[in-house]
Each structure stands twice: as C-alpha cells, then as structure tokens.
Image (cartoon, rainbow, N blue to C red):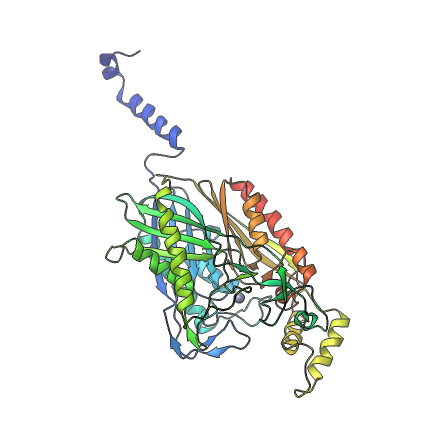
Length: 482
Ligand SMILES: [Zn+2]
C-alpha cells in the first residue's frame, strides 16, 4: 500500500489518469460530458376556416377551445443527441416530418435518424394530410409548411435550452379509461361491411346491439420518461398511454383533446407555473388503434362538452404525479437510435370487389344502401387502385439507457403494442404510434380475420401481415442498439 508521502510523490498526471479511468469505467462515459436535457413547445393552431378532420366529413373550424401545440424534448449524452416532438394532430404525413427533420439536422446537427416526431391523434385538429397517404406529395400545403416550421422551432428551442439533467422513467396502470372498441355482437346487420359482406366483429357497436365480448385487449400501462434539472426543477415529462382520443368536442371546434389536459394539469401538480425554462408535459399516443374511451357495457353517464377529456387527462396526470416519488433518477444514460425503411405491399381491390363497388357507385341516392359508408369505400379503394404497388414506411427505435421506444407510422392495435413490450430486449419499453408518418390502421393478421372497420380496405392500406413484418424489424433494430 502506498504511504501518504509516496502518494503525494505519485506523478500528478498518473493520478489524473487513474481518476479519469475510474470515472470512465464506473459510468461508461467521459467525465467531461454531463447528461443534458431541454424542452420547449410551439403553437400550431391554424387560422379558422382550415378543415377539421377526424369525423367522416371534414368541416371548417369556427372556434378554438384550446390551442394546438408541438411539444418537444432534446436529450444529449455527450456523444449522441435525440429529439422527440409530439404534435396535436390526427395524423401527419411523412413528407411533413421529413421536411422538419432535414431542417433540424441543418440547424442543430441532430441527425435525421435521431429525431422521432409523431401526432397525438386528436380528432379535433385541422388537417395536415395530403391527397393520398400512399404517395408522397411533392408540394406541401400552407398549413403543412407552417407545421413543419413549428416542429423545427420547438426542437431548436429545446436544443438551445439543454442543461445538465437527471433522467428517470416509470409506469403506472390505469385501466378505467380503456375499452377495446371491437366487439362480437349477436346481430348480423350490425356487422355488415361496405363490400357487401358480413364481418365477425363490429367497431363501436350501437346501443341497440347485443354485446357478446370484446375482440381484443387493452394495455393499462401509462409509461413515462421524466427529466429534471440538477436542482430538482422539472424539465419535462413524456407520457405514453394507449387510448385513441376522448372527444366530446362540438363540431367545427379545435381542441388538442385529453393529451393537452394531461400536459397542463401535470405542470400544475408539479407547481411549475412560474419557472423558467417552462416545464413541458407531453402525452404521446401508445398503441390505441382499437381502444377508445366508450364504456360499451354502461353508457348511462352524460358529460358536458369537453368535460370527459378534462377528467381523463387530469386522472392520467394525477396517476403519473403520484408515482414520481418512485422514479430512480440517473445522472447519465447512453442514448442510441436506429431507423429503417420497410417495404410493404399496398392493398388493392380485386376484380370481384371492383365490380361490386361499381354497382354501389351507380346505386341511386334514394335507394337504401347495404352499408351506410359504402360509397366512401368505393372512393377509398379506387384511390388504392391508382396507388403504387408498394410503399416504404419508416420505422424507428430509440434507446434511452435501458428504456426502448419504438416508433410506428400507423394506428397500431393494442395487442401489437403488448407484443412489442413483451419481446423488446431492453428492460422497459413503449411504442409511439403515428410516428414518422401516417399510413392508416395496423391490425394484426388475426384481427384481419375478424373484419371490422379498421381492417376494411381503405382504412387499412397495406398487406395483411404487415404487423408481423414490422414487429420483426423493430426487434432486430432494438438488438442493434441494446
Ligand atoms: Zn382515430
């Protein structure tokens, strides 16, 4: 053992080397690179008159209940930066996100593959969609350009606000607000589809249907990522919950739905109103393609406009807030990102379906249709007929320490999200849907067998086993960064 004197004589450079090595070896990174985080929002509310989508027919906006936002965080481990931004929109086409990603890379140096951008799926925002989701639009609309610019702004501000930070994550369960919306029902007439057939299950059965059982699960987990400054000041919380939207928004009114209620209420619970930089709450949509907020077994409750979304958003915020005490914050975690293009076949109507829908188109308006929306599906399948035979969809995986985040550009069925959580090689994970683009619903092959709205050609647009290919690819991407 070195005496104190001998230690004093030990060359200073050797001591520095030894200390440096200890720090390096114990935490796996250089001591001069602290973990940093920053967060920001930008307003993406359109002017009145832009078309609100989410229902069967778009309608012009004539009131704003609450402003729409993009909410962003930037993380930095010293080597790698990640940017995540979640937008109050029903679904954003890839070309809008791609424009934003290129500008963010040019202005901040954060590589395109390290940027994960998604829509919340509020049904009361105005459209950012193009003409055909299977074809990239060459020219963006005025609102699409504005949206891309504001995503860039939010990420640039979050990047500017980077400061040394601690990071942790956790989850709570809240099943009370989740209902699988696909049901086996007795009445055959309730299960008709727009193609002249009868499905096994019905989406959103009416109150007159005789319910048998739901066709799929729900995922009660509210996952979240929490960031705080070294003095304990909350920087941001990114939540993830597998619930479609809540609604209760009158027609033509713009609202960010329960996603924004969660963000604002959580800021209040954390008493962040006067702090700078401002706290940023974010709720991303998990895998909610077949899960909504309607209690099909008991529809007796009545709510005023906006009341239900407030109750749900506040409940989820409270549940996260209650559990924050258990979060194990870390001073540094390793970050990583993978991006991949997956080529999928585009679904096309066969000759038999084309012939049937040609008859539908010619059916006089006064004649009772076989299905209420058959003419809509005649148009939607015609669009698919004119589409290319394949589409390349972007998939992403992020690694934040032992937490994995998968990003999928579809409205993903909950059972697929549960499978990803189950198989992800990292110790915790969640999926953000409608990320990187918006290509329609993603049912599993087993759910395709049952039929129902989400599986119909036109609401679903890619090969029937797409979810299996997507999950396999995501797993190999997680393996590459774990
Ligand atoms: Zn929807």
